[in-house]
Length: 359
Ligand code: COI
Image (cartoon, rainbow, N blue to C red; front, side, top):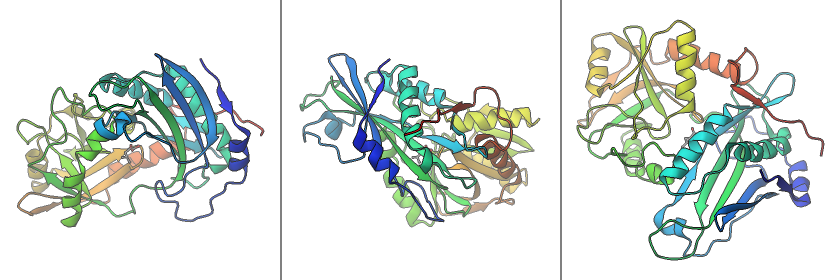
């Protein structure tokens, strides 16, 4: 494993950094340091902690033309005793490498990925928020930097981690969902399970339509029948039907959400039934109308858990949920946040503590 080399300018920059804003928002502030690693000639050459700054890219860099790019989203929490912990970062490391394989990019050994995350967290320790519900959001990403217009996998890459002291992704309103019945986000055999920019780019025209219609999030359906719920692009989906949690089962068109997995684990250990299965949107709408589904929510690292207020269909008809502020979802949210922030014990292995450095 290569140690991250610490540049004195980066240390000077982070020492002077502080954020004093009652509304942190999501991604509004970024720590003035970043980890950067260079891949060339079949190996990761070096890892550095540098001052945050613009990248210099050749206009022919492959990422700019062919979208060879992947990323992760992960959170870091300050506990009441001031210790700093990453939440399940091993799962991000694993998923990053799954995305890398699908996008024909080099993997980063898990211990190397974790070490790089630990370093930026350790140096950003003063930027990890104290308020409940806030955290330091890490965004590791990799881009193809080889110069050339030929369509083939790049041989050179940059890996970067930036860190953002963040609050909630949503403004607090319950989420109004627009059901996308025409466009698709991903098809079997495609890249839907990978955390790569292309999946998010594919969602944007529908997102614009969603917003124009007064909704907040697009719900994606399966590519063949345009019938089965997949995900929300950036979030997974749960509905509570007849008192049990139902969520689409994973397949290669759905991102394997770490928050999704954690919710399933917490729900099961709280005695709730969880069904991972194919769920048609029409089943959810019918259950809502029949008073069997009062509650649904979306979840993700950035979003945590946000209750769904309503579903709008292609013909603009709206089905509202009876329990928009979602009791079960809110209880799960509280349990998850309590575990992440050290207010309640978390299952073994969920918290990865960050060394306390003096610098
Ligand atoms: C995350 O939840 O970390 C994500 O990456 C989704 C994002 C697009 C906000």
